[in-house]
Length: 392
Ligand code: UD1
Ligand code: UDP
Figure 1: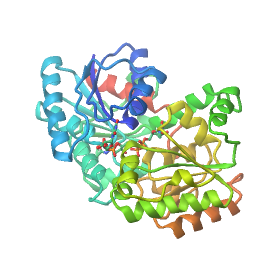
Figure 2: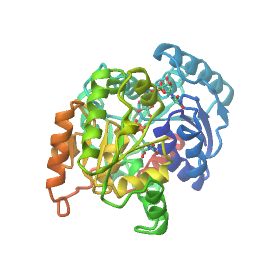
Figure 3: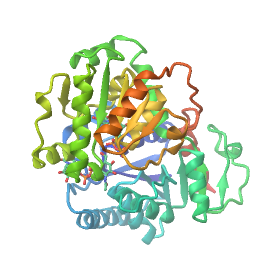
Figure 4: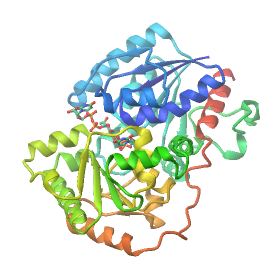
């Protein structure tokens, strides 16, 4: 069975790593296309090395650009690879421009598509990812959802062929009992990010040495710092929003909590352009380059709280039982806001500070954490369904 996986941006290397490992385990012939959307060492190669993702069989070297221009170049490059390789199925991840091109090229060639992380919706069409994910879902044959919320979103858009958890056994493809299933098929497999986050946290050895060493690089003590990441277009491209978030960081640091901020390249450029007062001058604020995934897991899991606009980081906070302030107006991970682990506050300084203070006052130790994201076997389920689908 020949699978062609398409990745290009940081969160995709992370999601693909865990699925790719499972594909190799069961003997799939997997080719990996890297569009080159992210290309800095710390945004790309570090993840291949650390997560043992095989080197891409095709590197398209697309780089940055306007949405249309970037997506068009990817589309041309991916189409050429597909014509040459003629895979049984294409696997795409998430909602970036790489996902969009990775959906459009194969659907036109009648090659089946599996979308990992299907069904997410923010209901904000000004968000570039919202358009990408809607198109990707509607081009796909297998829609692998991370949660029931995602399944419900797809039902509202007319998807009605569902495989339930009772229909698949993570280890036995033959256990898919309803062989009359027709694509497009929606399957709640759980979240691949939970699989990987758990594996890496275990590798770090709980309270072990690896973790202590990573925290000490930044002079941090467990539970005594805020970890923050910001990169959404709605925050970086709006100087008022960026200013609001950075000012909140500054005030949190003044209040005595250290703030570690690994800066996404997009945000670094926006900070330089917006001529904001230098954050680095504030005591207690630690700016760094983007960090590796293993470092990120160590830093997230030991933080007092997280402040972010990242999709992935919002959930990783929950995986580790760390409360999170979400600097956005809406989120795809609504269940975490409803249950009170995450607070959705936008980009205004006051709102961020208010949420931070409320979290610091609350005792989270006994707060329930339901298994919204499965049990850490999403990759096995995905590979199981792929095997059944291609072999049927
Ligand atoms: C992209 C995704 C976003 C995802 C994020 C993950 C789209 C539309 N957006 O956003 O959904 O959450 O990746 O991090 O696909 N840059 C570098 N070096 C790099 C990569 C980017 O300097 O290795 C800079 C460039 O100036 C570039 C800018 O960052 O123009 C934005 O990069 P781009 O890939 O277009 O979007 P992201 O903001 O990274
Ligand atoms: N991440 C990382 N290093 C960093 C920042 C984030 O390894 O410096 C990881 C993070 O742990 C998560 C993923 O990148 O697994 C999230 O990607 P990102 O925030 O870039 O994109 P999004 O999830 O918002 O699409």
